[in-house]
Image (cartoon, rainbow, N blue to C red; front, side, top):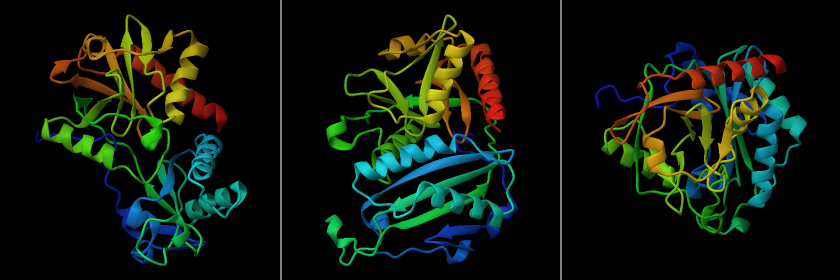
Length: 301
């Protein structure tokens, strides 16, 4: 489709040409923010990361993002080598170096570092982790609701690669994204190992049926911060919300559908597998949740 968009589409911003990137202890110009070809992340996808969003001077839910980052690092036996306070100071240093106050997005990445030889074993990474913070001026610009296509790539079992792990190894999701693009959609809708609707290649997924909000059980999806906030605000505001198994049949018959993620917060879905969802526009429940989420962020400022 000529008007295909992505869930991370943003306004063009010339300031992003002259960014300062935090790399291993200091901010350097974007053109100088380089890592070795021997880096574990480049060579093997051996690392973990977090995306964070700046609203009106505050990094939304940064403490919960850091919880997830440190938990993921422990899961892969990676010593970040910095305390939470030190890492948060690095985030603020990067923000200051780029003179950012709002509408910014940060990608904080930690890899196992430079390897002595180009092979898999973690013991070959002996120089300590590579840590970088890419921060961009970023105002979401998604001109219409997203179109999804169901793909054969699934969100798998935790004994292969746990879908909850926010790792640098994203090839499964990238293949899903490519399959959706080949089908003429913007993003991929992925099922779990049992054939139930799970998530998209980049975001968590919700539907609305008769005023109730449904999402997956959470067993096979990223433990999304925004996903949980949506569940929380629904419960607090009296909106029925269910974490449950449901099928494509349930999905095609939904009144509304939307995606959640740190970048776009709540992004409406207009079409799945060529079937229009509801009116094809953002529905009233999604609008209500958007307002509740915005109020939650403002309350924490």
